[in-house]
Length: 475
Image: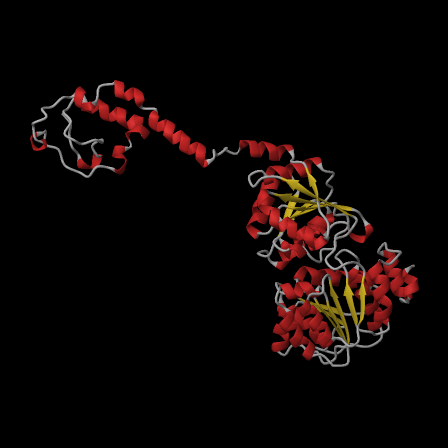
């Protein structure tokens, strides 16, 4: 089957061909015809299957007929993150270059006045994140009464991020008679409820089992230790056939530290995380796409929606906290029918999280042997003896001072008259005995110091060194 068999216009087919595509993916082949027929649709598809084009392509042809009005977009695409929204906008520019369609991108981190100016001119396609859209709507800068086509993309991600109440409110402000497309990698109960409420007799398509991973991705687990993770990562990057790689971490601080560490070792590396401003993120992505850097360290803010060709490896420096995030992370490689490699660094503490991921996928993930760097790091870690052994060592240590009994005791070294009362001894300031005074067997060095001055002076019952703060002069 070719794109021409799907009923797309000649102008659109020309743009698709120039983009380097000749045959539709399964999700595109099943979704495009019903969308062109103006039917509601539920698309369940794993990441990296060409899902974005399955709604962008038919939307371009549908919107080719009609005219936009000020502050009243003709269609609306909701995305959970800025990166996803920007990715969809790039698709519209790429495939719609032979159509005279206008587009606006409403995302946070960008000057709002420019977005308002674009809306004032009127747009055919509005691509937005829920937060910024609701903000502009409440300011009275946008009307949704003329929107005849709604796309809710990455619905399960919307659920994870707490956007479902916003989406429900947005849906109530759109015309009741409209076409609605909903795409999701999984179909949990809240998403099913949302679809039942706002979609009318939708056609449901599913190209693979929900939350399954791309079969063209070679998955493996690299065993390591907490201390040896960075060494293991560098070992993998140097030994594996890595052309471009995205490295995922759970924390923003780890992303920053890891990028700096790899940079010091000579790797061409960039970073992207939630604390960065939107222009900074886009700049790093452009560097990665342009080949200026070939390694991108990222938090989960970049796990979904990054459609970058030729990513050879995805490496999970940290095992993701949620199994679904694993699916979306490794989906950054093996896209568009290409093969890819996904490697996850695992420590003994990650056993439960890995078990959850394998349960979600329905199969075990192959284990790699420990790289040399990990084995060296593990060998360098101090070996702690079991408690029982340490107890035995204490017992032996207690027995060790036996030769001391053969030496003259303090009383013998400095004899005093037993009948003499303590009060007649050389006047010394009385202070409470320190806690460790009785632990002579554990502090042989201190005992030696005490023995030095005991030989010169009679023992008055004080078993420890004279504290310096008393300023007592011996002799």
